[in-house]
Every structure is written in structure tokens, then in C-alpha cells.
Length: 353
Image 1 (cartoon, rainbow, N blue to C red):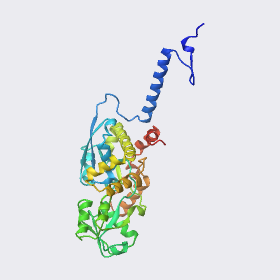
Image 2 (tube, helix red, strand yellow; image 1 turned 60 degrees about the vertical axis):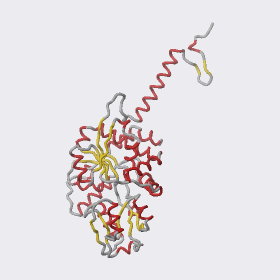
Image 3 (cartoon, rainbow, N blue to C red; image 1 turned 60 degrees about the horizontal axis):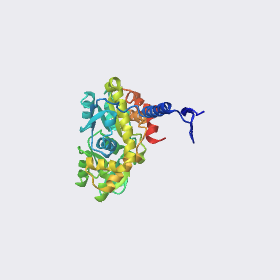
Image 4 (cartoon, rainbow, N blue to C red; image 1 turned 90 degrees about the horizontal axis):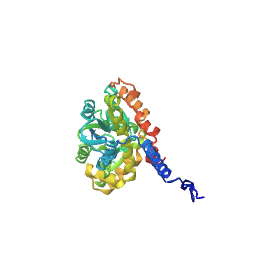
């Protein structure tokens, strides 16, 4: 008697199913694989879903926004159902006002610049913090080779009380250097650097890639502020409390898109450096490589968790300076969205561990 086709065997597999059951089996395997992928990345846009048009702002031009620049250049936001318009708004105060007014839907900016307004009561929260250490360096004129040489000199800052001013004061205090003036110059890091060249000030705190240009111009890199080991939140994603409450899926997808951007930049250094070069108009390969290393290796947290300690210490400094603090530290951030990436297996799928 001939065995039914359903009972034939295949070496290395065991019993093979008859044709209809075999097709069903293969289909089930495909569905299972699709479900596993969907579980690992449940944040991508669904088939046929219309893209959502969003505006995301940065409040400066900086290598610290490398992941955003690269994601925009390589259309990473598309798969999450977004059509993104990137806008530049000078200064954190104006950018935060636009966020609260829903003129922009997200802000990517240094949290140290925005926390004073959040602490004073502005209804905005940090929802992801990819960069969590100080990327700044002190560059000085040629005659200043050590921190001690700053005695009686002036450092250029944007304005009194801003990030460049606070970092410069903290650095001078750490080394106990007397008689150092903080001279408001205004403008960008490049403009403050030009003020140093003109000897209006003798030093400035800047970030890569400008520090490489300073070194190539013959000026001194005297100190790297990452060595101060100050709890700090640099580039971070902000959303309004209203968006978090009313549009949590949008916020979750944006946080997931940023997580993928970190992974994409890590795996595609050439594309990341091309994005930096385009936005910052830098051609020097050394400057591009230094920027890439600092912003994608040295100060990054792949989990993007907003560090509670840094927020708490920022509020303590604000209180000590007499600035208004009307909200508790835990009211200024929401780590629920980044925690969801871990729980869903999304981060493990991205990084393989």
C-alpha cells in the first residue's frame, strides 16, 4: 500500500506535511515572524496610515544634534509615520514658548538651558536624554596655557545666567581662580570665538567641532569640562505636557525614532559626518571625526533615560541662585516612553543585547 503523501519524511526535518498543510505551516511561520518583528518594533507606521506633519526645533546649531541631523537627512522619521519640518529658533526661551503654543511639536535642546523655565512652572517635560555629559572645552588665547593664567582675564559668555556663563563660573570656582570676569558677548559660539580672536576676551567655552578649528588656528585647549564630572543633561527631547497627555502615541513614536537614530549613527559614521558637515558647514575631516566621537561615543546614553540626579541637582543650583523653583524634579521629566522601549524589546532588537 502506498503511504499517504502526508506521511512522507524529509531528511533532517522529520515528517513533512501534505501540500495543503505544508502551505499552512509556512504561512504560520511567516505570521509568527511578522508578529515577533511587530512586537520588537510596535512603533512604526501601519500600512496605509497617513503621515503626520510635525515641526521639531533646535535652539542652536551644534554637533550635539548629530542624531537629529542624520535622521532628517536619511528620512528615518518616515517609517514612524512622520513628515518632519526642522526649524531653528534662536534661544531656549523662544523655542519653549513655541512648544507650549504648539507652533512646534518637539524641541531638541540642551536641558540645562531649558530647566530654569520648566522649574519656574512651564508645562513642558523632558521625554528622552540621549546625551548626558559635558561636551564643552575651554579654549584660550595663545598666552594662556594653564587655568592659573586666567587670573585677571575675561571669559566670553552669551549672557549672564545662561549655560555658557554657568559653566564658566563653575570651572573657575573648581580651580579657585580669582579675579576672572564673565563678559557677555551674545550670539553663537562662533561669535564668541571671534571675540576671543579680537582679544575682547581671553577665553571661551565651546563644543566640537569648533575646538578643532581653535587648535588649528594656534589657540590652546586648556580644559575639557567632561572632567568636572558634573551631572548634566545635554541634547534632550522636550514635549509639552498637553502633547504627552493628549497624543501619547505620537510622543512614543518620536522617542522610538530617536532611539533608532542613535543606532543608525553608530552604524553609519560616514552618513553621520556628512550630516554634520552639511548643517555646520565643516569640511575638515579631523573636526568631523572629533565631533562624531564626542557626540556618538563619549557622552551618549543609548537608553536615553533622563537622569533624575542631574535634574535634582539643577534645581538645587537654581534655588541657591535665587531663581524661582515651583515644581518638583520628578515633574520635569517623563521616562515612561524610554522605559517602554526596553519593555517592548525594541532596544534589544536595535542593539542586539
